[in-house]
Image (cartoon, rainbow, N blue to C red; front, side, top):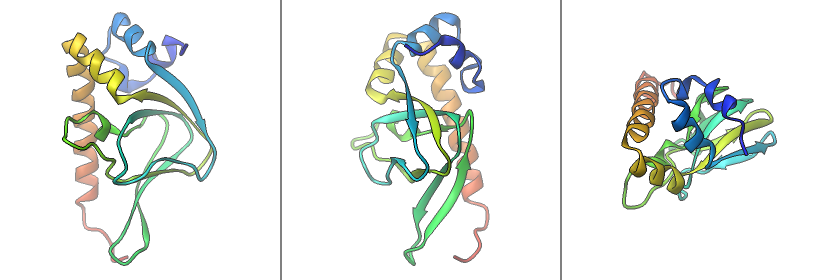
Length: 149
């Protein structure tokens, strides 16, 4: 079982009560990845949501010319895989997530989180509020002029 203090130390979870943290801990997994591993691939089924505990991950995708383009580097405390929590007909990741260093993450099965959100609407609201902020920041970052690749 994941230590609740790990979640309490992460700003993403700062607004959550101890009871909410306990609910999340019940479905959280610690997972380790080596440099060069993929946590997810663009357009593949989005099943997991991750919080980075150690290391760095590149969010990247292939450009129209076939080159791999790094969109952003996500480090400790960052969230990836929020596509897994958005209710869509077919949930798919929007970019590849490739490790740049050895990485440790908290991994949550999206279906487990969704069930928790339906059981505790406040928990669901607080998590989705954080995800909306992450999505907004990434959208703003990605819509700045991109140099020719």
